[in-house]
Amino acid sequence: MHSSKPQLAVVANPSEHGSGGELRALRSVKEYAKHFHVYLFTPLRAVGSTSLRSLARLKSLGVALSGCITYPRIGKLEPEFKLFFPQLTRLTTTKLPFFDGIVVLHENIDYLYAGYLLGKASGAPAMVLLQNPPLFGSKKRLSEILKAVYLWEKLTSASTLEEAYATVRLARLQVRRPIEEARIRMLLNKYSLVVGVSRATVLEMGEPWFSKAFYLDPGVNLNEEEVHLLSRIRKSVKEKENCILYKGGLTPVKGILDVLLAYRLIRKERGDLKLVITGKLDSKTHRKLLVALKKLNLKDYVVLTGFISREQLFELNAKARLLLHPSHMDSFPYTVLESLHAGTPVVGYDIPALKIYYGGLPGVRLVREGDVEALATEAIDMLERSPKEVNPPSLKSWNEIIEEELSLVKKKLLGEHRHS
Image (cartoon, rainbow, N blue to C red; front, side, top):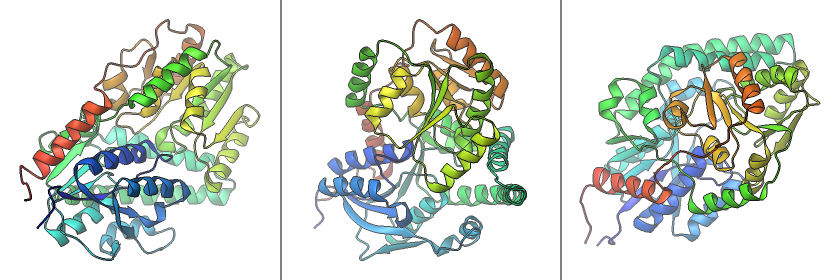
């Protein structure tokens, strides 16, 4: 006899202190635990001190930590091996229980393959919730992303040899990308249900997916606690500080290079403004950032906070004069939403995720993707003529969003099947 709750396998890296996608995965798993018996599978390498705390909390809610996703350490050629030999992905688990359904909460190829393996072993239907678009229908969009990666690698190279190796890495990425997209398409087609976390996710993937995939519109919002905290902090800030904020992720895809280049231009007009960059800094990223800052002569004007708590981040956001968010890849950025709740205007690129949900708001200005000069010009203008009204868009509440997600899992993935 099965218990009344369906048994759900979840493949995810849920973490309160990770990326926006990891935070959202954590919130999904917490809600799933109220309705299903949840068996969590997570990548072994992703488990650190912060994610361990999140896993401990999930365990206290009744989530079973059922196994790890592992892949052999191969070194610098590992991305290529994952493409050509995905079968080397292993699910380490003591016992594979019966599942009614499988949900994968990330779009990375190893997560997709792990979900496929679970489905193959159990015969259960599988759903994937895509946090970011894993495919791009627009070659121009993909070109901008690859360009950002290359320029970042070049700027952060400390020697001629490193710079030459950056060129090799780009060549590998250009060769790998179409193969990776083909693999991802193949894996997605094995899923019973493909869901985008926003309309932008599916739009970015291109025409064939409009009819194949569902999407939440959007599937991201702050919870009530965060909204109240931001409201309190916003009211407590009497005067803005002379700083610009960037908190979009310390990768070229999220716009770190564009921010530094734009800030260098902004400083010519507004030399009084510091740039504050937040986010977890591992030793490699820290070294690269220091190389870039030195080359751009910005070392004395940029503050690297490293990881800070969400409350500290909200306070910093409310005190900043402007948020720069020139991301090349997003579905629905938390960072922009938090900034608008904090009363701080935003300048970013006109990629679909920002255009669809933030375009036209008085506190947001968008420029053509990759146009750093326009980004700096709009930032200077926004600083000099700060909008009177800075407010977030009207969205469904987090409770409404999670109800919609649960409905997809229960009705579309599991059907009306009930265990007695």
